[in-house]
Image (cartoon, rainbow, N blue to C red; front, side, top):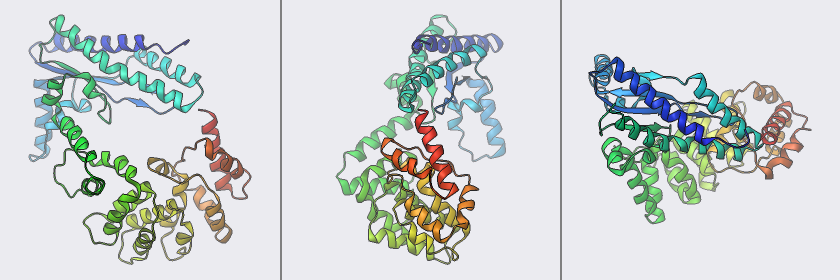
Length: 389
């Protein structure tokens, strides 16, 4: 491809909607079609897949709802309306549609960098709201559906949905998205102390029915840095409501060490009644915060899995989800000098690998000459991934 062919993407997406709406109309002429929805978008830096498409009718939806309610009469079935994978009139991509996606992917790969590929993939995704609006108009003009019909692109984060719809349609069909947007704007406008408290309350599920999804608060809380730490310490120490493992996980992502936070994480590790999952995240947080030696000092008194989770954290994918220190193999090298048996144990731990940036290349290159195989393998892996971008 000389350039990314977004026109072909849009045309294929529009044709996919019209083809399937026509099919459902022909096969189920008495059913009321309320929506068509793209779903299962996938791109991982190496591949792009064309999404599935589902057509929703009021009658088929009721059948699905009845099936769920038969299993659990108290089940909330409201989300099924736009759950494409649950609806019966669903199709996967054709070979032609997959070829269009592959063409976009090949162009992204040809640019030779992860950021460039990401930009191409984002352009690919942004075609679908345009195609959704065009397909809706065409389906109405053809007489296949009524004005109430909508077409939506349901990406995992629901970020494409607003661009598919008018404000009135968005508020009618996805009121939770509108409410979440308003709540996020309200919280971000608060003074720092109130803003942090509001985000912590959602992260620790202290508020029932918050319109802002708790998953969305993670990146917002990580941006707060030092201001978030006292609230996390309070949970770790049992002075505030919340799961301690969540506090430790967030502490790793906030990545701002204070004496109080380090001490609280140590107490979690030393709690004989503590749960192993909580200790695992406390171990991860300590190592993320640059205090790997404190975890190493507990080798022999903590479960091996906890030690491995902590030692591997600065080199794994969870590191990249929040703020993090630059790649540095020296703390782990110091641990392995005293406990060489953990070299093989870390090699056998399938926890994934972090991504590095330009500033970390020198440390990765140094790591390729390490006496420790885990470090050599990790360094070679991250360098290969970096250079392939």
